[in-house]
Image 1 (cartoon, rainbow, N blue to C red):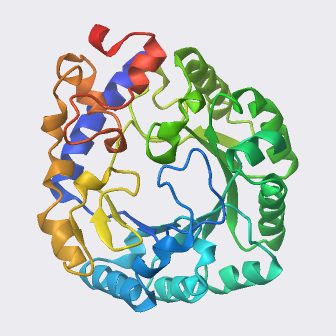
Image 2 (tube, rainbow, N blue to C red):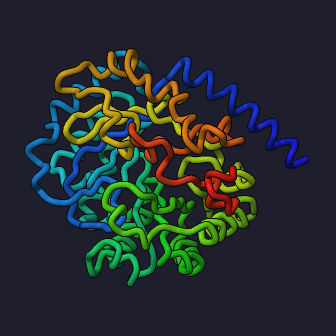
Image 3 (cartoon, rainbow, N blue to C red):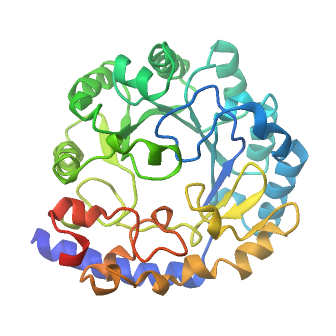
Amino acid sequence: MLKVFKKLAHDAFLENWKQNVETHRMHWLEVEVTHRCQLHCLHCGSSCGTEQYAPKELDFEEWLDVFRKVAKAYDPAQIKVAVTGGEPLVRPDIYRLIANITEMGYKVSLMTNGMTMDDRIVKYLAAAHVNGIGVSIDGLEENHDWLRNKKGAFAKATDTLKRLRDSGFFYVEPITTVNKRNLRELERMEEMFIAMDMPSWRMFKTFPIGRANGYPELFLDGVEFKYLMDFIRKRYTDKRRKMKVSFCEIGYLGEYELDVRSFFAQCFAGINTLAVLAEGSITGCAAVSPEFIQGNVRTDDVVDVWEHRFHVFRDRSWMKQGKCGSCNVYPYCRGDGFHLWKKDGADPAECNYSLLTGKSLTQI
């Protein structure tokens, strides 16, 4: 019965994919409001860091102009805004910016490393009507601090989780990027988050983009990735558990589809998701290679770009090449995540399905 259900889900996915590509309704607006960050994390996909980026970044009025144009063309109540960085809270105008965004009708969530959080900032975020806040926790103390190149980072991040939870203003959850070093800490991390009364815990694996490319020792092998999937599936499918545990990275997972997350394999970059980067670049996702940038809000109308460009995101037949071209699960996988591709690449940088099945891309 379960196999029949998953087959029906696979077929429904294909139809849903076609409809989404045709209508390309904007559901998510990802705004990378800064590249600046107090940390220098080894796994950072955007290679964020110093103040050198600040002069190039969109200012307050430029960001407001983006949101006004999108709100004029579409219903902002139907668009979820994800505020990312860098570390968004390094912008002194971030609270005023978010307050203006929520006044337009958007629902806003925020990702933070927790390094600057205090009661004053909690009040500012509450006054700006932030809906949800994700806090990055990437291991227990030793491994979290090592990954983030900062002693005391773990203490600050866990204090932020507690502070936000105790405020009662937000939906708050820990977000973990799993690597070889923190994989065996997951059970103890789970106990810690349950003790903190967290409603949910989302996980990704470390993937080879940005600064992480320089640290291949972070990447999970097939056995480790399967361990992670089994860990999550056991918890995700147990509806008695108070804290929901899920895998939130896109990409085809074979037998694990719908057993570790609520959505099916879909990478909606440039289809239902629009991203605007700190310096104004318009793309389908902040993690996508700069080669696929479609324009810039300083020189192009963001709505016009969304409606009339993005062909490379919406017609992915070009991905059916190389080893993906002969793969029997391509109709469901669709080339895995867009962030794993380059224009001159015949194959994605990584393949979830081959990792989980123990097959090389040539065997699939």
